[in-house]
Image (cartoon, rainbow, N blue to C red):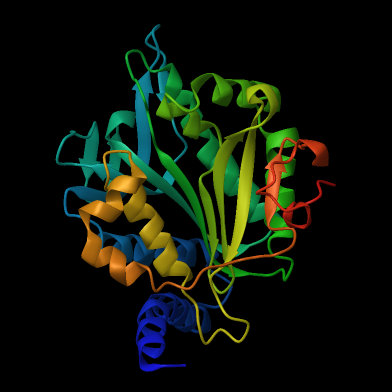
Length: 313
């Protein structure tokens, strides 16, 4: 490995190592008797790390998103671990230090933070984030775009990304109160011209020491819209390299700092982008893409290798 690779690998990995070392010290001292306090602390250190690296016009808080429908009934999210909102352009409904209640138009991204990835924690994160889609009912609110992420400090399973894909299938097919076909139809009716299509599914899932899964939407036969969840490795097998947090931070920066056009991020900050280009991201060769709802092999486009598609169980 040359000096350039050593330099950037060490730099990008240092953030993930910092998070892990703080958690290891806390877990050693506190143990498993006070997981609620430990969980709150993990949210706090992640908020602090994000706050130190995004533009100052954005605040990083915890709390709720609030609006009302046409009949005056409240539309309220569940309590969200991390809310990234624009305090330069918008006022909060309520604020007391880190705790806020903000309207949906002020919010740019939300993050659910969990200590360990497992089926229970993943489904809980998806349930909390799914309440965001209700804000499409806000009168006069157009092109509402709130990025939704889940961040896990650790994992119990070695079945990446299968375990994530299986949880996504289970939640969107069987658990969510919002029927899958209605979710797909709402996405299809808004995609791509109305940015609110993104509210109907999670944008990204990040697991320290492992990798990430990002969502995009693609049209197939006769504009048959499908969710495409794509898995990437962001950490080495022996964990001497772990760029997971750096990729997570970059995804947030790209999403919130570009007037809703991710491509503008690269022209707006070319110097920063030249550094980001050194982040290590590896796309898996097999079972790396989950197309959901399922699609037959004959309908796949040529740029999607059949062996890369995850077979829905």
